[in-house]
Length: 207
Image (cartoon, rainbow, N blue to C red; front, side, top):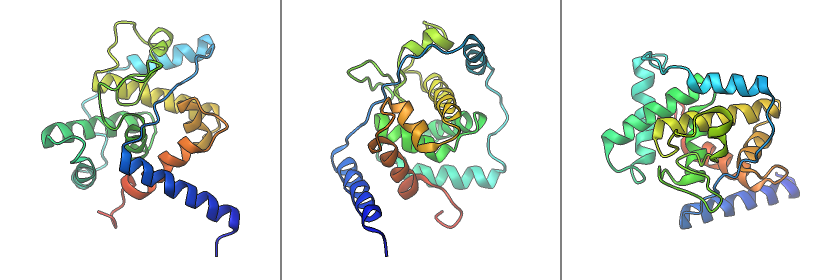
């Protein structure tokens, strides 16, 4: 038996999930500009500038086939072209893994943020798949960077998420809320984690 508060929380998350699935609601990010220390800014800038390697982010060929196959089925309605879909998935897995993030969680965040629309732009200017605020280009990147480029956006988004999780001592809920600019509220982190657990979380059993 669930306690009454827990039941109400689960019910609220369920209703939000149904609303999201049924109406394509998107919770675009609104990361807050903060005066990041020069040391942290340098570290983040170095992470962004590091070269993309050619080594696979998967531990084995079987893992690559299984994960890409599973997530490809999840994204078939959002990215109809199979070749494009598989290329995007490889990029998501690579960028998430190289920054020690769960690629399944990153997929859930992208769905909530932009619905996998690479050209999405919010009313406050958050752009691309992971809805990155443009001020990050000044802080850690280059003003010429295109946040509508898939790999560039993924790299910015993953670095920012990793940064926020580190700020919150790896507290997932608080890190996600900070990414969305809604620290102190539960709606956004509850939505992302619900999508992650019910749709994108990969396991050999589910596959």
